[in-house]
Length: 166
Image (cartoon, rainbow, N blue to C red; front, side):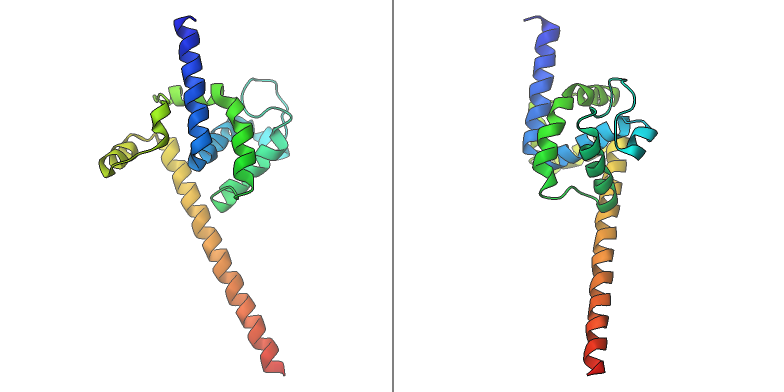
């Protein structure tokens, strides 16, 4: 096996290992591939251009829908995670290219960050895209918590009105 071939095999194994063990990696990978879709492909949830980036025609409807939901609510659902994990693994070449463009190398041991110092270093070295994704996820979680609180308040108000009428 040539050096380049071995390097590709190592990248593939590392990325797929990371995706197999980390829900956060699955969500980030989905976001990265979704970003590669053209705006029109994102809007119609299908593949329109054969440009070698973004989702395949077969995956585009489901994965685009999942990406939009993740951006809206801040995370994938428990039912979406295993399906997206299975589908997103085949995009390892695009994910390796994104990592290289951001000056990162994916290594198999990135699946866990053990010490507090490692966490601090990881946060400092994350690219701006990673921080932007984290902000969107946090905003989605806050928005979802606000929607739940509003729903409960409306529900409790409606229940109170029902009991007041009898």
